[in-house]
Length: 165
Image 1 (tube, rainbow, N blue to C red):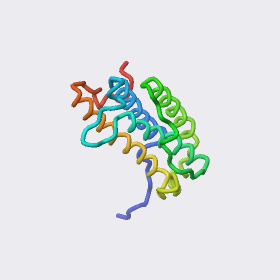
Image 2 (cartoon, one colour; image 1 turned 90 degrees about the vertical axis):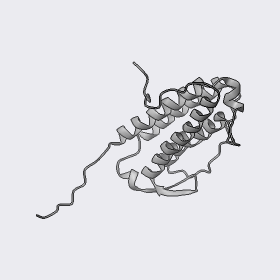
Image 3 (cartoon, one colour; image 1 turned 90 degrees about the horizontal axis):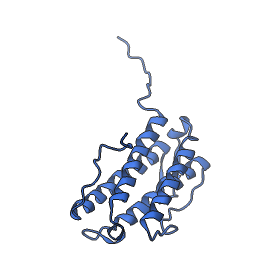
Image 4 (tube, one colour; image 1 turned 30 degrees about the horizontal axis):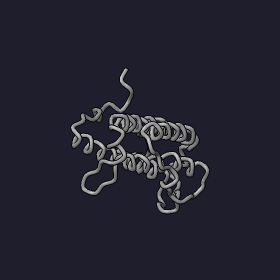
C-alpha cells in the first residue's frame, strides 16, 4: 500500500469563530452574574478582580483580530479602557464582539498559516494567535468561576456557551 499525502480540513474558520463566540457569550454571562461591587473589587490570592481580567480580554480579542487583518503591529494596551460600571464593561464587550466578527471574516484560509507578530511580542502563525485569544479567555473565565463560587454564587454552566433557546 502506498500512503497518499492528503490534507483534509478538520474545522473551518467559520466554526472556529463560532467556537470563540460561544466562549465570549459564556464569559459575558459570567460578567452579568457578578454583583457590581465584587466585579471590580473581589479577588483571591492577589489575583486581579474579574473586571480587570475582562478588560484584558477586551484589549486582546478585537484589537488583535483587527491588527491581524490590517497587518498593524501595535503594542498591547489595556490601560486605554478603564470602566467604572458593569454596564460600561458589557457595552464594550459587545462592541469588541462585533469587531471580532467583522475582522475575523476577513482572514483568508491561507492567512491563518502566516506568521504575525501580535502586539509586537508574539511571533506565531495567525491560527496560533487566535487560539491564544480563546485559551486566554477560558483561563480567565475559570478565575471568574472561582471568584463566583467563593462569593456563594452559582456560575453559568460551562457547557452552555450559546444562548439558551
